[in-house]
Image 1 (spheres, helix red, strand yellow):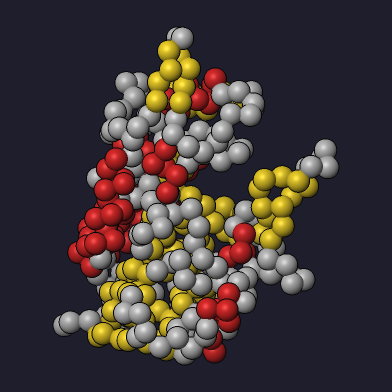
Image 2 (cartoon, helix red, strand yellow):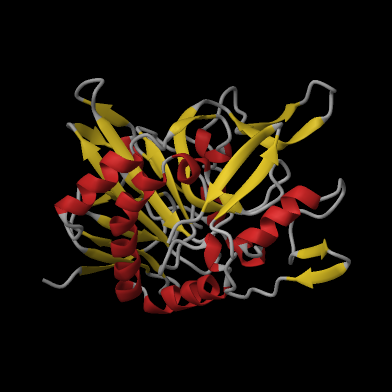
Amino acid sequence: MKPKILKLKPILSVEESDKMAGVLLQKSDCKILIDFDADVYDAESGKCIAKFRKKVIPPHIQLAAFNSLNIAAKTSMNRGTSGGKVDGKVNEYKIRSNGKVSKTSEAAQPVDSGIVGYFDRNPRMPFCRLTAFNQQHFEKFKKAYPIIKFVDKTYQQLMPEHYARQRSIADKTSQDFVIKDTSFTTVTVNKNWQTAVHKDKGDFADGFGNLVALRKGKYLGGYFVVVRWGVGFDLQNGDLLLVDVHQWHGNTPIIKDNKKVIRLSLVMYYREQMKNCGTMAQELDRAKNRKKGDPVKGKLTIEKHGKETKHQGSNKKANNKTSVVKRRGVDKKDIRKK
């Protein structure tokens, strides 16, 4: 059966939707609920808002992913606008003990969220790296790989132009920091989290969001709503949502039958700054030899044995499969397995 084609007019102006940032949505904010195969377009511009497919992910792949990634979501305060508002504030930058303002923002409330795969540089960790989950639970990551690969393949089928642009930049990125044979570098895992209205940041600007919701037990709500059009999607086990995550979006309340109910959402994407990563060996050199004041972003330049080497987006792999980063006085093993 072919998907239903929907062309929707916005119910909010750009200015009105901007004012929704940090708001926790209610069921009434979902004017149109989609629980069937559908392709949704903006009636004014013709641009695709989302493509939704029901029960396309095989059950055994869902179960393996749920069992493997359930522990990935940890309590976090570092989720910005999606963490919601408290006393009218969305998020603030933490104040350090020395009185200086931190470069890390803090959400208004704690949420259960984590990242899987690979991550780019930031002020706290100025080198590309495996996520903590991959370092500590690589076998679990491998068991979750089939769902990531399945979503990647379906993304290619449903959004070929967006996929081609994203896959092109992923293929030019050091393969030490790309999920093998996909267009993704990273998966965000959220547990029982009603995200406030936000736009995704840090992912590939010309890509589309790839979302899956894995459910254990019964609950109502948790609809994914794109607020400017008032359209919501009810993700059940086996469903896949491809959506423009650079539009304002959030979830309606998750009403659980009991405390044991779990809604585990997976968001798969390419982190845009990963294009600047060197090989694993080069990034480890960067971590060991970086001096205070060196830039965090931009193409990799390393002084090594008196010679300057530059990373230009090549696919060269590190020779060593096990490397050590010494951070905060503790040796951390970064293991890349093929």
